[in-house]
Length: 510
Image (tube, one colour):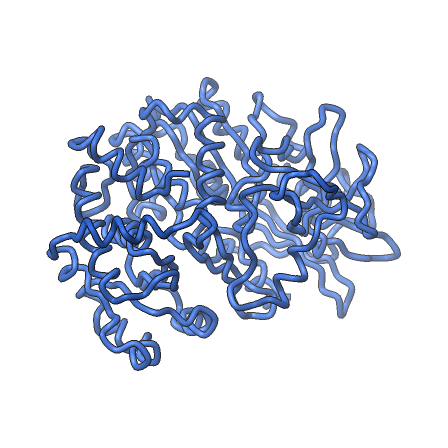
């Protein structure tokens, strides 16, 4: 199996002068990207660390992409920590990760020395400055010797997601897991022809960024890193996408909704847009329909998954305008993976019945870094495994989502297991209330929570709708016991670092 560094070297040979990436300050060809990454990789490799975590403390940039590749060239694995991440979260990550080295730029050298002080006391000299290392001569013999020792089961990166206990979870993704995902998505959407021109929206510590970076390298496409400031100005964001002739978007629903809600879609037409993939959270149908009406010839695809499955487990290509009272199906299993829908006793449920979705296959994560207890809770032996089955199916990951199959065999997302509540003697999926509220005119985004102490269902929303009118209209869509007991209008829906609705913060409003 080729690693992404092998693919980097190949693309640098076959497309040496093609611009691979651009950011706010520079652009870089594939040959230059490979050269600078190998130089930086040599600098890291000379520290003598192998198969160890290396922190990349940088802003989203071409330099950050080079550092990701460099860590892999060096025989180690990376964790990206954005310089704008809250310091309290960084310190919690470091307690778990215990990195062996840190890569940063001179602009953030002093900040890095302070934040990583305890690590650098253990590993003095293991702070790599990009500007110094990238000027070094690469050592091809050293890098080749390292590559000869690497295995596809080695860890490629560790990404930290939110933990229910307040301690971030470090998801361990191997080379094989990520490469199997990249190969599948390229086949599914015809990306191997090298014509992909992508706009990268998510932070580099988000799983979708691995697609942005490594699929671009793998296919010889082009990736433009969107400046963060544009996400406050929808029309300027669309103008950026138009000027860069973007034909592919892999984007979180919050951004698609923001553009639709600000009525920006008619202002700028994206002449080259062919594929819009969204994932990370539920996409409201009302806003998706606005995009489909504006781009009837563009393919819109819902990819459902999690970091623990290297991003994608199921896929659904949207056929056209959808019923706004329904949720978008999450579709069928991605070709490289397997799914099980299990009841509380870990038995498969009959078609049409609700159960917990579980994943199996080569793109399963290896668990949570330095956290065997939490790993054992959700990565368990496959209860349906039989001797002779593929080794990849020995384990399953419990997604924590409730689903059912419809008459077409597509999976319908019901809601999170932990979003299912008991209210007035009824079991209720909060996601069903959110779907109903999202279909109402005047509601842009919404989130439903349950206040256990008072047994209240609370709906938070943004938009022009009035609170009293919202309750009245929901009574036409929901049974009485599901109508929120409290409705609260917000000026802005809080989002977490990954661009998803921040439910933890909203709980503080209860």
